[in-house]
Image (cartoon, rainbow, N blue to C red; front, top):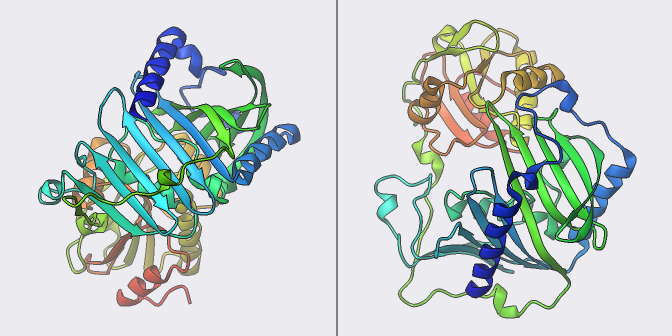
Length: 425
């Protein structure tokens, strides 16, 4: 396996040197967002997209090597092996490193382990970073539902580049971004490694994110994916599938692993431990609004505040913003103040999102270093995850704080009640 990976590394590095940034261009990615980037649906192109997703989901076994890279010439190589119903093995190596990380599902449990030592993770602090740094593994029960593998891959540490296409699609789940597709259109034909491909463009969330897919005519699987994410700065990444194999035999040992005797099991700490504890003072801040003014937390003293840190490109944030808007309409300017805080997105994208979704509650839009210090330092979002909710009482004390958007929204309702405000009945 290691020799095979070295061969792929040499091949891919050579390809980059030869092709350079021509490899990334369907058309040049605009530096700034504009409404014209929002794609309108073309039935033939949508059929190509649906056919690609169907080909991935209908396979009983799927193997490929994924090369993920960007304009800085760094790269990550993923070796992906999957079989139904719940078997997978994903190994990653970053650049020319000899170290690797693996997440493996054996049908019952999910194992994560590292060769060459566990990397420093964003959930680490001074104490946890010294725990189980070598000969360590994580074991947990297989989780049902989408985004399981994607969450497990976060334990690989900070990669140069992540997989763009979610591996959970093979196991029958929808791509998390599918509900937010603006449209799909054709971009003609192009060959990848002598494989004839149809190229399509897909925009999501009013073109906050755009993906180009090179879909092979011979098996309807992708050979290349280009993703453009328009935050305050534009980011571009490429994922290339090398020689995908469908329904070829995969040895059973691929999905089996047991820790050596001298290895130790490690339980990753929760990122919520960095958040402000209940009863603590919520630090005041004054940050920029989408207009020319500023917003301060102290402006809302005397009201219960639901502070939500969010980003346009997060599906969970989209769901959370809809619920918060309903609360805002329920309470108006009385008793409960809903306050959004966006610290990463392009100003025009945020304004378009707020208008399209009818969001009328106050939202901070500040991408400055001061805002990031507030998010990371004052409010404990060490992993810069979103959505992050804080419920703050009338005296400015934290009632509760948590990551994510719960389906039943019960935690938020309970926190509002503890703050003295019955809500969401």
